[in-house]
Image 1 (tube, helix red, strand yellow):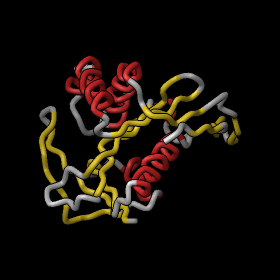
Image 2: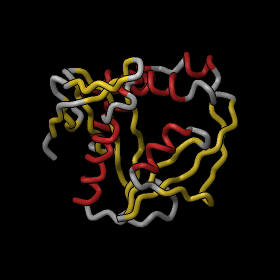
Image 3: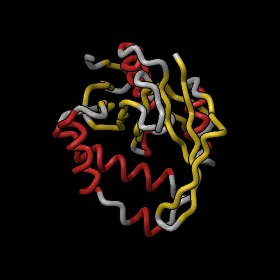
Image 4: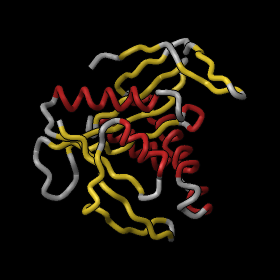
Length: 192
């Protein structure tokens, strides 16, 4: 899938919204040299998004190096597929998508394995463009659906996914522990 270019964003200053052009925003396939920045975005996003549900020490000790190795491997294997949003020459975020990892999933069911943005780019349309690229990949791959998992209570993410047409599957709630915190996650699905 070729890269797509965009040229706008909105920002809020006081009581007014301003239209500010990006010099460039390109959604493109991730390459090996992107892995360190993808890892940095991954860690920073977790540290901001999950600060109210995970212990500070756990978040502070997330390893960019470990995530970098993980993303290097994924990019080299091509599984999951990873795209980055390159905004004004910087990687602002990424999305990773592959076959659904859920037990009993149909062979044509896909899953968003990860989508994270640097916090400075939240709410500016970058995530929406990454998800559109992932959706187009699913459609081109003849997927029947795409799913993702969200931590219960992560209202920002839930609202975003709902705005894209994903529907909650309340019977899918799973409990797990992470960093000493007890959490729940729920699957959301978009059918084609």
